[in-house]
Picture 1 (cartoon, rainbow, N blue to C red):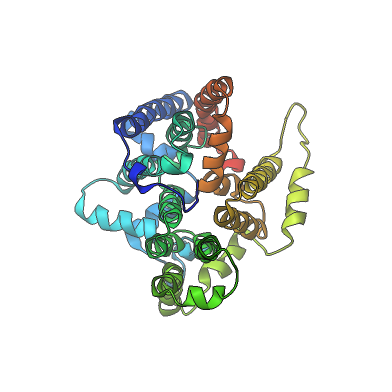
Picture 2 (cartoon, rainbow, N blue to C red):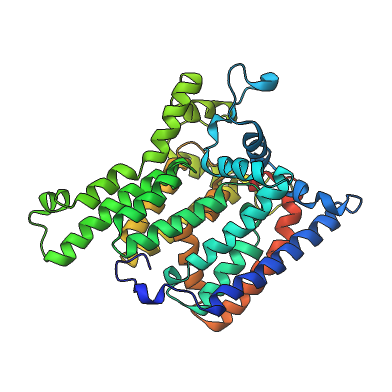
Length: 385
């Protein structure tokens, strides 16, 4: 996985690879719909997509419909929608001009289609391991956290673009990887760090090809496509910053507005420790929301270590920055962020697929967990925000 040795001849998916995720599209939709009917028995079945639109989803719906806020902020709330990056809501908004469907319905259908594409694209990165592929398809489309990828959140586009960027990076196509990274950096801010992975992969490729570190800087700068790729990779972020500067006079508004959600830059280790030691005050409660979020970050760091142990350095670098940077602003949304880190979830599925018994237990656990976590999502569990 994530290595330049990926064989292009095996990239084309077969019929089984294309059809298996469709099974999990159906099972996931069925599980989430039945959970919706159980939690809200009096609601009309047509309200299914709207019921799953929780938390940031509402911001994205408004963003797709009306665009970014100016000053003053509509409704005089303390937050503005500049915190949310533009690529996916902009895409939904453009398609919405052509397809006469309610925004949340259109976005949910598009998310399911994008999630399916992300699973298929991950096939070579999963080592073409059928069991790992089945677990990954189940996780994205039918798993406990599948609501992140099947309603209107940017996580699903983030997963697809990350997967495509690392696929092309593994084939040594720096420019194609940079193109997907540019879109990634317009989807979530941490996407821009794949540009560092591109540089690291190029450096490793130079060392492997030449057998020496001598002359590496001149050698890399002498590759026009690589130099162009490094400039292309962060263009999505830069374009959004330029827009914000034009629109409201603050190119860093996406960062400054985080104060409205009480997100302040601090020591990530302190945030992590405070979360792990936030013991339950209610008798019988196993874990607090803060502990769940902190454990998600710990799991992400452990999986990053596995990537490093496997010498998958570009993916490990991206994953580490994708954990530490958000964690420096607090634990909020950490479970969602870890679920959307494709290098981590792909690595996890390869580990769970190692033994047949573990594969079976994991598959059943994902499907059963989807029911309970969907109920928690509909019930407003803040650990899932």
